Picture 1 (cartoon, rainbow, N blue to C red):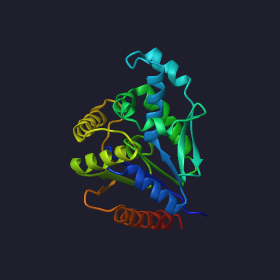
Picture 2 (cartoon, helix red, strand yellow):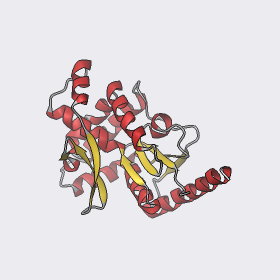
Picture 3 (cartoon, one colour):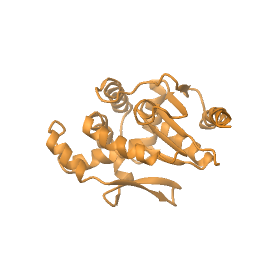
Picture 4 (spheres, helix red, strand yellow):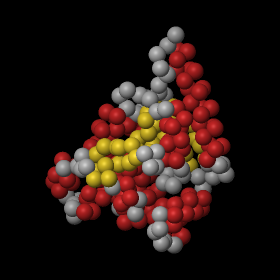
Length: 233
């Protein structure tokens, strides 16, 4: 029997959740599911189609017309989000999406829509999924839950450098404001707020390299696998 578990990674914006989730998935030969990309793609569709977020009928109709899946990109060696047969990875990382995605993700109908798809993806286990409510709502029984965080100044710098690398010209103050706004909305929304699961392991990577955090996460994975499969003998 192959050893497979669900690894749920939650945490604040720009604390490196996706980076570590991708690295873990590659190391373990698991599937990586970028839930943030799903919400960003939904946000892109809403913006393009002028969906009024306070109109339940408008939101429901829009969701009926949204079809999401991931396709492996051999150039980047990662899975890209596809919205209604259109590869939209390059569009969902823009600041206009970042400014709106937390508001869209706070809508109950949107979260129900996305969570249903995410749970379907995890039925066979062997996945690493990152987001805001993976260990608390999507997979409350995940074998390993990691809650990632980092100092706000560190997160601002990382986000700024990421956007600069993508050719987006933005100043540090705007990035700081965007992250603070997203933190507030994510933590205070009524539907599936960002919070640390009681059984999650906390990983503060403010002063860690990507190699150091991956090494620590792999240690936790190995411990979890040993415990899970020793119980099944």
